[in-house]
Image (cartoon, rainbow, N blue to C red; front, side):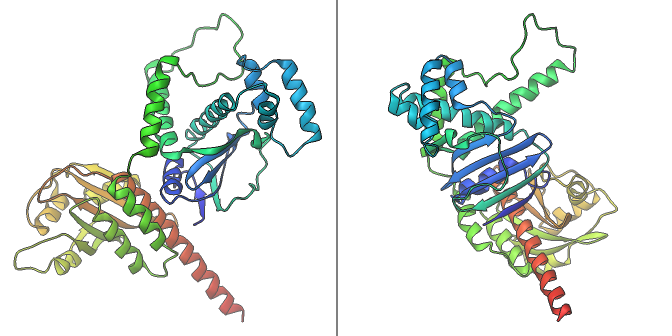
Length: 390
Protein backbone atom coordinates (compact mmCIF):
# COMPACT_ATOMS: atom_id res chain seq x y z
CA UNK A 1 0.00 0.00 0.00
CA UNK A 2 1.30 3.43 -0.96
CA UNK A 3 -0.59 6.66 -0.35
CA UNK A 4 0.10 9.88 -2.22
CA UNK A 5 -2.17 12.88 -2.47
CA UNK A 6 -3.40 16.20 -1.10
CA UNK A 7 -4.54 16.87 2.44
CA UNK A 8 -7.57 18.68 1.00
CA UNK A 9 -8.74 15.35 -0.45
CA UNK A 10 -7.65 13.00 2.34
CA UNK A 11 -7.11 14.52 5.78
CA UNK A 12 -4.35 13.41 8.14
CA UNK A 13 -6.80 11.77 10.60
CA UNK A 14 -8.03 9.53 7.76
CA UNK A 15 -4.45 8.70 6.74
CA UNK A 16 -3.57 7.79 10.34
CA UNK A 17 -6.57 5.47 10.57
CA UNK A 18 -5.74 3.76 7.28
CA UNK A 19 -2.13 3.09 8.36
CA UNK A 20 -3.15 2.06 11.88
CA UNK A 21 -5.91 -0.31 10.81
CA UNK A 22 -3.79 -1.98 8.15
CA UNK A 23 -0.84 -2.18 10.61
CA UNK A 24 1.64 -0.91 8.03
CA UNK A 25 5.30 -0.05 8.52
CA UNK A 26 6.58 2.99 6.67
CA UNK A 27 7.26 6.72 6.63
CA UNK A 28 4.66 9.44 6.16
CA UNK A 29 5.97 12.79 4.92
CA UNK A 30 3.70 15.84 4.90
CA UNK A 31 4.57 19.11 3.16
CA UNK A 32 2.63 22.37 3.40
CA UNK A 33 3.22 26.09 3.72
CA UNK A 34 3.64 25.48 7.46
CA UNK A 35 6.68 23.31 6.82
CA UNK A 36 7.55 19.63 6.52
CA UNK A 37 6.61 16.90 8.93
CA UNK A 38 7.55 13.24 9.18
CA UNK A 39 5.94 10.35 11.05
CA UNK A 40 7.38 6.83 11.12
CA UNK A 41 5.03 3.89 11.73
CA UNK A 42 5.88 0.34 12.70
CA UNK A 43 3.04 -2.19 12.49
CA UNK A 44 0.61 0.73 12.61
CA UNK A 45 2.17 2.28 15.74
CA UNK A 46 3.94 5.65 15.75
CA UNK A 47 7.58 5.21 16.75
CA UNK A 48 9.10 8.46 15.51
CA UNK A 49 8.07 11.99 14.51
CA UNK A 50 9.75 15.23 13.48
CA UNK A 51 8.74 18.61 12.14
CA UNK A 52 10.78 21.58 11.06
CA UNK A 53 8.20 23.80 12.77
CA UNK A 54 9.07 22.21 16.15
CA UNK A 55 12.84 21.93 16.40
CA UNK A 56 13.62 21.55 20.10
CA UNK A 57 16.44 19.08 20.58
CA UNK A 58 16.24 16.37 23.20
CA UNK A 59 19.07 17.92 25.17
CA UNK A 60 17.44 21.35 25.28
CA UNK A 61 14.13 19.86 26.42
CA UNK A 62 15.76 17.92 29.25
CA UNK A 63 17.76 20.94 30.41
CA UNK A 64 14.85 23.40 30.18
CA UNK A 65 12.62 21.07 32.22
CA UNK A 66 15.27 20.64 34.91
CA UNK A 67 15.83 16.95 34.19
CA UNK A 68 19.44 17.31 33.07
CA UNK A 69 22.38 19.51 34.06
CA UNK A 70 24.05 21.55 31.34
CA UNK A 71 27.41 20.04 32.26
CA UNK A 72 26.04 16.52 31.70
CA UNK A 73 24.63 17.56 28.33
CA UNK A 74 27.96 19.03 27.23
CA UNK A 75 29.75 15.83 28.21
CA UNK A 76 27.19 13.67 26.38
CA UNK A 77 27.50 15.78 23.23
CA UNK A 78 31.28 15.40 23.33
CA UNK A 79 30.91 11.63 23.59
CA UNK A 80 28.44 11.66 20.70
CA UNK A 81 31.04 13.27 18.43
CA UNK A 82 33.16 10.13 18.84
CA UNK A 83 30.17 7.82 18.28
CA UNK A 84 28.09 9.69 15.74
CA UNK A 85 25.76 6.74 15.10
CA UNK A 86 24.71 6.46 18.75
CA UNK A 87 21.60 8.49 19.72
CA UNK A 88 22.06 11.13 22.38
CA UNK A 89 19.40 9.55 24.57
CA UNK A 90 21.28 6.25 24.71
CA UNK A 91 24.46 8.06 25.73
CA UNK A 92 22.65 9.95 28.50
CA UNK A 93 21.19 6.72 29.90
CA UNK A 94 24.56 4.94 29.78
CA UNK A 95 26.10 7.90 31.61
CA UNK A 96 23.44 7.67 34.29
CA UNK A 97 22.47 11.30 33.64
CA UNK A 98 18.79 10.37 33.12
CA UNK A 99 16.82 7.18 33.57
CA UNK A 100 15.48 5.21 30.63
CA UNK A 101 11.94 5.75 31.96
CA UNK A 102 12.39 9.52 32.15
CA UNK A 103 13.87 9.61 28.67
CA UNK A 104 11.02 7.59 27.18
CA UNK A 105 8.46 9.88 28.84
CA UNK A 106 10.09 12.98 27.34
CA UNK A 107 10.37 11.40 23.89
CA UNK A 108 6.74 10.25 24.02
CA UNK A 109 5.50 13.74 24.94
CA UNK A 110 7.60 15.34 22.20
CA UNK A 111 6.21 12.92 19.60
CA UNK A 112 2.68 13.63 20.83
CA UNK A 113 3.23 17.39 20.55
CA UNK A 114 4.54 17.06 17.00
CA UNK A 115 1.61 14.83 15.97
CA UNK A 116 -0.96 17.20 17.51
CA UNK A 117 0.58 20.08 15.56
CA UNK A 118 0.54 18.10 12.29
CA UNK A 119 -3.12 17.10 12.73
CA UNK A 120 -4.06 20.77 12.46
CA UNK A 121 -2.58 20.98 8.93
CA UNK A 122 -5.48 21.06 6.49
CA UNK A 123 -3.71 21.75 3.21
CA UNK A 124 -0.59 20.48 1.51
CA UNK A 125 0.69 17.18 0.18
CA UNK A 126 1.40 13.80 1.76
CA UNK A 127 3.38 10.72 0.77
CA UNK A 128 3.40 7.43 2.67
CA UNK A 129 6.01 4.89 1.61
CA UNK A 130 6.11 1.33 2.87
CA UNK A 131 9.15 -0.16 4.55
CA UNK A 132 11.69 0.92 7.13
CA UNK A 133 13.16 3.68 5.00
CA UNK A 134 14.66 7.09 5.48
CA UNK A 135 12.43 9.94 4.26
CA UNK A 136 13.37 11.76 1.07
CA UNK A 137 12.63 15.16 2.61
CA UNK A 138 15.13 16.77 4.92
CA UNK A 139 13.92 17.62 8.41
CA UNK A 140 16.31 19.92 10.20
CA UNK A 141 16.35 17.90 13.42
CA UNK A 142 18.10 14.78 14.65
CA UNK A 143 15.10 12.47 14.35
CA UNK A 144 16.96 9.61 16.03
CA UNK A 145 16.62 11.54 19.28
CA UNK A 146 12.87 11.02 19.19
CA UNK A 147 12.63 7.29 18.45
CA UNK A 148 10.61 4.91 20.61
CA UNK A 149 11.17 1.16 20.77
CA UNK A 150 7.54 0.60 21.73
CA UNK A 151 5.28 2.73 19.57
CA UNK A 152 2.34 4.93 20.48
CA UNK A 153 -1.14 3.93 19.37
CA UNK A 154 -2.08 6.00 16.32
CA UNK A 155 -5.72 5.69 17.42
CA UNK A 156 -4.87 7.27 20.77
CA UNK A 157 -2.86 10.09 19.16
CA UNK A 158 -5.71 10.75 16.75
CA UNK A 159 -8.42 10.89 19.41
CA UNK A 160 -6.39 12.98 21.84
CA UNK A 161 -5.13 15.29 19.08
CA UNK A 162 -8.65 15.82 17.76
CA UNK A 163 -9.87 16.63 21.27
CA UNK A 164 -7.13 19.22 21.82
CA UNK A 165 -7.76 20.73 18.38
CA UNK A 166 -11.50 21.01 19.09
CA UNK A 167 -10.80 22.70 22.43
CA UNK A 168 -8.45 25.17 20.75
CA UNK A 169 -11.03 26.03 18.09
CA UNK A 170 -13.73 26.53 20.72
CA UNK A 171 -11.50 28.98 22.58
CA UNK A 172 -10.80 30.85 19.34
CA UNK A 173 -14.52 31.02 18.51
CA UNK A 174 -15.36 32.38 21.96
CA UNK A 175 -12.62 34.98 21.62
CA UNK A 176 -14.34 36.12 18.44
CA UNK A 177 -11.26 37.84 17.13
CA UNK A 178 -11.19 40.29 20.05
CA UNK A 179 -7.84 42.03 20.54
CA UNK A 180 -5.58 40.22 22.97
CA UNK A 181 -4.15 42.11 25.97
CA UNK A 182 -0.45 42.90 25.73
CA UNK A 183 1.68 40.40 27.63
CA UNK A 184 3.27 41.66 30.84
CA UNK A 185 6.49 39.77 30.12
CA UNK A 186 8.30 38.60 26.97
CA UNK A 187 6.81 35.36 25.66
CA UNK A 188 8.96 32.37 24.62
CA UNK A 189 8.82 31.37 20.94
CA UNK A 190 6.87 28.21 21.67
CA UNK A 191 5.07 26.77 24.68
CA UNK A 192 4.81 22.99 24.98
CA UNK A 193 1.36 21.49 25.32
CA UNK A 194 0.43 21.59 28.97
CA UNK A 195 -0.06 18.24 30.71
CA UNK A 196 -1.63 19.04 34.09
CA UNK A 197 -0.48 16.49 36.69
CA UNK A 198 -4.06 15.76 37.80
CA UNK A 199 -4.96 14.70 34.26
CA UNK A 200 -2.05 12.28 33.78
CA UNK A 201 -3.58 9.17 35.48
CA UNK A 202 -6.80 9.55 33.48
CA UNK A 203 -4.87 10.07 30.24
CA UNK A 204 -2.72 7.00 30.94
CA UNK A 205 -5.84 4.92 31.60
CA UNK A 206 -7.39 6.21 28.36
CA UNK A 207 -4.21 5.46 26.39
CA UNK A 208 -4.05 1.91 27.80
CA UNK A 209 -7.71 1.33 26.94
CA UNK A 210 -7.24 2.49 23.35
CA UNK A 211 -4.12 0.39 22.87
CA UNK A 212 -5.54 -2.83 24.37
CA UNK A 213 -9.27 -2.91 23.73
CA UNK A 214 -10.66 -5.00 20.91
CA UNK A 215 -11.39 -3.06 17.68
CA UNK A 216 -14.97 -2.46 16.60
CA UNK A 217 -16.46 -4.99 14.18
CA UNK A 218 -16.50 -2.55 11.26
CA UNK A 219 -12.83 -1.68 11.90
CA UNK A 220 -11.87 -5.34 11.64
CA UNK A 221 -13.80 -5.60 8.37
CA UNK A 222 -12.12 -2.44 7.07
CA UNK A 223 -8.69 -3.87 7.76
CA UNK A 224 -9.44 -7.11 5.90
CA UNK A 225 -10.95 -5.33 2.90
CA UNK A 226 -7.91 -3.09 2.42
CA UNK A 227 -6.07 -6.22 1.28
CA UNK A 228 -8.75 -6.83 -1.37
CA UNK A 229 -8.65 -3.28 -2.66
CA UNK A 230 -5.56 -3.75 -4.78
CA UNK A 231 -5.59 -1.46 -7.79
CA UNK A 232 -8.88 -2.59 -9.43
CA UNK A 233 -9.11 -2.43 -13.20
CA UNK A 234 -12.88 -1.89 -13.41
CA UNK A 235 -15.51 0.12 -11.58
CA UNK A 236 -17.50 -3.08 -11.04
CA UNK A 237 -14.82 -4.41 -8.68
CA UNK A 238 -14.99 -1.25 -6.58
CA UNK A 239 -18.79 -1.21 -6.43
CA UNK A 240 -18.88 -4.76 -5.09
CA UNK A 241 -16.29 -3.96 -2.41
CA UNK A 242 -18.12 -0.77 -1.39
CA UNK A 243 -21.45 -2.57 -1.04
CA UNK A 244 -19.79 -5.39 0.90
CA UNK A 245 -18.24 -2.99 3.36
CA UNK A 246 -21.38 -0.84 3.60
CA UNK A 247 -23.20 -3.97 4.81
CA UNK A 248 -21.05 -3.72 7.98
CA UNK A 249 -22.41 -0.24 8.67
CA UNK A 250 -26.07 -0.09 7.52
CA UNK A 251 -28.96 -2.48 6.89
CA UNK A 252 -29.66 -1.21 3.37
CA UNK A 253 -27.42 0.49 0.84
CA UNK A 254 -27.60 1.62 -2.77
CA UNK A 255 -24.73 2.69 -4.98
CA UNK A 256 -25.59 5.52 -7.36
CA UNK A 257 -23.63 6.52 -10.45
CA UNK A 258 -23.29 10.27 -10.90
CA UNK A 259 -24.03 11.48 -14.42
CA UNK A 260 -23.97 15.02 -15.81
CA UNK A 261 -27.66 15.73 -15.16
CA UNK A 262 -28.78 12.92 -12.86
CA UNK A 263 -27.82 10.10 -10.54
CA UNK A 264 -28.80 6.52 -11.41
CA UNK A 265 -29.10 3.41 -9.27
CA UNK A 266 -26.28 0.96 -9.91
CA UNK A 267 -26.49 -1.77 -7.27
CA UNK A 268 -27.92 -2.53 -3.86
CA UNK A 269 -28.08 -4.81 -0.88
CA UNK A 270 -30.70 -5.20 1.85
CA UNK A 271 -33.60 -3.74 -0.15
CA UNK A 272 -36.67 -5.98 0.18
CA UNK A 273 -39.80 -5.20 -1.85
CA UNK A 274 -43.04 -7.10 -2.19
CA UNK A 275 -43.66 -8.67 -5.60
CA UNK A 276 -40.81 -6.66 -7.14
CA UNK A 277 -37.18 -7.26 -7.99
CA UNK A 278 -35.15 -4.91 -5.78
CA UNK A 279 -32.24 -4.94 -8.24
CA UNK A 280 -34.50 -3.94 -11.12
CA UNK A 281 -36.21 -1.19 -9.11
CA UNK A 282 -32.86 0.25 -8.04
CA UNK A 283 -31.50 0.27 -11.60
CA UNK A 284 -34.59 2.20 -12.72
CA UNK A 285 -34.18 4.94 -10.09
CA UNK A 286 -33.14 8.23 -11.71
CA UNK A 287 -32.94 11.44 -9.71
CA UNK A 288 -32.38 14.74 -11.57
CA UNK A 289 -29.71 17.14 -10.38
CA UNK A 290 -31.67 20.29 -11.20
CA UNK A 291 -33.92 19.85 -8.14
CA UNK A 292 -33.15 19.74 -4.39
CA UNK A 293 -32.24 16.26 -3.14
CA UNK A 294 -29.92 14.40 -0.81
CA UNK A 295 -27.58 13.75 -3.74
CA UNK A 296 -27.46 17.36 -4.86
CA UNK A 297 -26.48 18.33 -1.30
CA UNK A 298 -23.55 15.87 -1.37
CA UNK A 299 -22.44 16.92 -4.86
CA UNK A 300 -22.57 20.65 -4.09
CA UNK A 301 -20.69 20.31 -0.78
CA UNK A 302 -18.42 17.46 -1.94
CA UNK A 303 -18.83 16.06 1.55
CA UNK A 304 -20.60 13.16 3.21
CA UNK A 305 -24.05 13.63 4.69
CA UNK A 306 -25.49 11.88 7.75
CA UNK A 307 -28.81 13.03 9.15
CA UNK A 308 -32.51 13.19 8.45
CA UNK A 309 -33.92 12.81 4.94
CA UNK A 310 -35.52 16.17 4.19
CA UNK A 311 -39.01 16.24 2.74
CA UNK A 312 -38.87 17.26 -0.91
CA UNK A 313 -39.96 15.85 -4.25
CA UNK A 314 -36.80 13.87 -5.06
CA UNK A 315 -36.23 12.52 -1.56
CA UNK A 316 -39.87 11.46 -1.25
CA UNK A 317 -39.61 9.71 -4.63
CA UNK A 318 -36.55 7.81 -3.41
CA UNK A 319 -38.30 6.70 -0.20
CA UNK A 320 -41.37 5.59 -2.17
CA UNK A 321 -39.32 3.53 -4.62
CA UNK A 322 -37.56 1.81 -1.72
CA UNK A 323 -40.77 0.65 -0.05
CA UNK A 324 -42.52 3.79 1.14
CA UNK A 325 -41.14 4.08 4.70
CA UNK A 326 -39.30 7.29 5.60
CA UNK A 327 -36.03 6.48 7.45
CA UNK A 328 -35.10 8.37 10.62
CA UNK A 329 -31.46 8.77 9.52
CA UNK A 330 -29.67 8.33 6.22
CA UNK A 331 -26.10 8.63 5.03
CA UNK A 332 -24.67 9.52 1.64
CA UNK A 333 -20.93 9.35 0.94
CA UNK A 334 -19.24 10.39 -2.34
CA UNK A 335 -16.47 8.51 -4.11
CA UNK A 336 -14.16 11.03 -5.76
CA UNK A 337 -12.03 9.99 -8.73
CA UNK A 338 -9.70 12.43 -10.50
CA UNK A 339 -11.33 15.37 -8.72
CA UNK A 340 -14.88 14.41 -9.73
CA UNK A 341 -17.65 12.63 -7.84
CA UNK A 342 -18.16 9.35 -9.69
CA UNK A 343 -20.33 7.40 -7.24
CA UNK A 344 -22.44 8.04 -4.14
CA UNK A 345 -23.30 5.33 -1.64
CA UNK A 346 -26.68 5.77 0.11
CA UNK A 347 -27.53 3.91 3.32
CA UNK A 348 -30.18 3.69 6.02
CA UNK A 349 -31.16 1.34 8.85
CA UNK A 350 -34.67 0.39 7.87
CA UNK A 351 -36.59 -1.53 9.00
CA UNK A 352 -35.24 -1.72 12.59
CA UNK A 353 -34.22 2.00 12.72
CA UNK A 354 -31.16 1.39 14.90
CA UNK A 355 -28.58 4.21 15.10
CA UNK A 356 -26.05 4.17 12.24
CA UNK A 357 -22.52 3.60 13.50
CA UNK A 358 -19.20 3.33 11.72
CA UNK A 359 -19.78 6.11 9.18
CA UNK A 360 -16.18 7.27 9.67
CA UNK A 361 -14.76 3.91 8.62
CA UNK A 362 -16.97 3.78 5.52
CA UNK A 363 -15.70 7.25 4.58
CA UNK A 364 -12.12 6.02 4.92
CA UNK A 365 -12.84 3.04 2.69
CA UNK A 366 -14.48 5.29 0.06
CA UNK A 367 -11.44 7.58 0.08
CA UNK A 368 -9.10 4.65 -0.41
CA UNK A 369 -11.31 3.17 -3.14
CA UNK A 370 -11.25 6.49 -5.00
CA UNK A 371 -7.46 6.63 -4.89
CA UNK A 372 -7.19 3.02 -6.05
CA UNK A 373 -9.39 3.80 -9.04
CA UNK A 374 -7.36 6.91 -9.84
CA UNK A 375 -4.18 4.86 -9.89
CA UNK A 376 -5.80 2.18 -12.07
CA UNK A 377 -7.00 4.81 -14.55
CA UNK A 378 -3.56 6.43 -14.64
CA UNK A 379 -1.86 3.10 -15.31
CA UNK A 380 -4.38 2.40 -18.07
CA UNK A 381 -3.65 5.76 -19.73
CA UNK A 382 0.10 5.17 -19.52
CA UNK A 383 -0.31 1.73 -21.11
CA UNK A 384 -2.38 3.23 -23.94
CA UNK A 385 0.26 5.91 -24.58
CA UNK A 386 2.98 3.29 -24.70
CA UNK A 387 0.99 1.31 -27.27
CA UNK A 388 0.60 4.44 -29.42
CA UNK A 389 4.38 5.00 -29.42
CA UNK A 390 5.10 1.51 -30.73
